[in-house]
Image 1 (tube, rainbow, N blue to C red):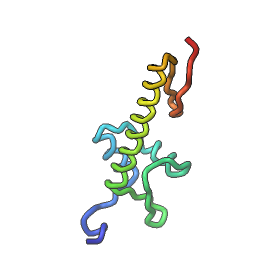
Image 2 (image 1 turned 180 degrees about the horizontal axis):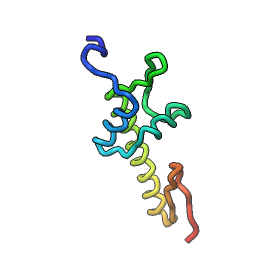
Image 3 (image 1 turned 135 degrees about the vertical axis):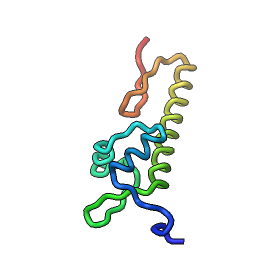
Image 4 (image 1 turned 120 degrees about the vertical axis):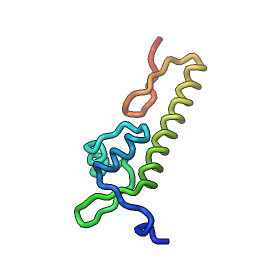
Length: 98
């Protein structure tokens, strides 16, 4: 079955609302930024119109959550070794002096 026959693509505002409805805090502007800078969900264009598929949005969200879990596990291991660490918003682990 062709993807177009059983799913409707979402516009950027609808994609953001779809993700927010599933607990992922993201705005339409954030998706637009990720579309130009990278790091966002898969995007398809119909001419100049950006379109997102629900499956791609969910896969992207799951990858982001998995990345955070791996980073937290690493921070937990470092703390267990006696190091004080902080996870920055830029997704890096920063050792801190105690």
